[in-house]
Image 1 (cartoon, one colour):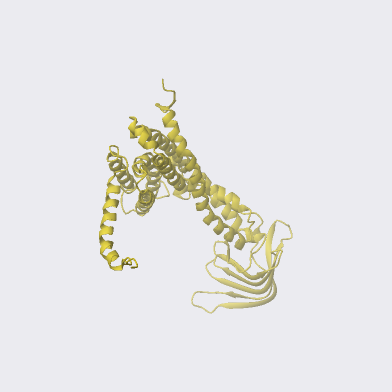
Image 2 (spheres, rainbow, N blue to C red):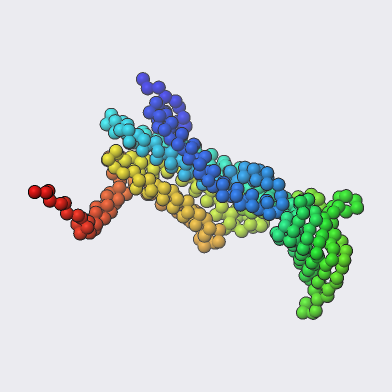
Amino acid sequence: MRTGTQAAGVRFGVLERYVLGLTLKPMAIALGVVLLGLLLERILRLVDVLAVAGAPVILVFALSANLVPHYLGFAVPAAFALGVFSAFSRMSQGAELESMLASGVSVWRLTRPLVALGALLGLGTIAVTGYIDPHSRYAYREILNSSVAYAWRAHAPAEAFISVRDGLTVTADAVDATGRRLTGVFIEDRAGARETLTTAAAGTLELTPDGKRLQLRLHSGVVLRDTQPGGRPSSLRFTDLVFDKTFALEAPPFRPRGGNERELTLSELWSEMGDPASATPDRKLSSEFHARLARAAALVFLPFLIVPLSMTMRRQSRVANMAVAALSVLAFQNVLQLGETLAHKGAGPAPLLCWGPLVLLAGLSALLYATSTDRPGDTVISRAMDGLSAAGARLVRPFARLFRRRRPLPAG
């Protein structure tokens, strides 16, 4: 009597659990490595942005945490494919796969738990990218806005143009350790209908008399104001001037969530699609909606693609199949991203451009899987690789004969 567990209506026995165990460990390691690699490049850029803006660099941890759901959508397929390839390669290399198939175990029985795992990962991806990521993306932008756009009010950075508000830009050549004493101040004000430029040898950020706001006191400078279009600008020299705009100590409330289609959940995208009162064009909503679902649905078909490529026997090379598997997953992600971009720009219907790459992936996976069940490891791709290797050998053989050294004759 075979012991097993019931999962999603499918009975999993010892063999199925063994395959899952071989898959989950390398998958978890790969997920951590890929996610860390994707985050590392963004973390370095965030550290640079926060340092230039004078914001606390410690905020990089909060910003990075809000980026994790976004990068999980790209890291999970790669980690899952690597886990499946590692499990079947290990069974092939240790002759376990040959023994299982010789004892009557079908390839489908070995693939079935991976398809179930892919379905669970797909549902998790929908939950993460469809509902968690929109909120975390908005939180990321809110933290970045409050820490960068308004950080200069507590500590002005040197040699950096800071957009304080719409049309108002401030920069300084040098700033002291407190961030409040500036040297070589330049201010550009385009908030009104006319442009005003202000330069000063020095400046000081100080509290207003009521202690609720910040004001900028300038020393030894010039104000150049455009009086009328096409006319001669007026100038004013001063020795001590308080800039005519004050600034709040706290950043104003950030805009409401939903200003971008990526900040909407799947339910909100579905509600906004086709609504004439929506502020976002329907093509953007539709492309975002279908791309999220297609990316999650691809996880179900990955085992049918990876399993045939990883069932290589001991005398066969696994490098070529590994390269094909990696390129296939990468190509699908890029083609889906291209389709989403084209649909976003209105170049075609979103369902066709977003689900078309998934149909191609499913067709290629079905072809490989159907041709590998009778003779594991013998697929269309493996035969093509063998043909290329044979053709390369025939091409190199004449040149090898020309440069082959003759063996010396024995003495005597």
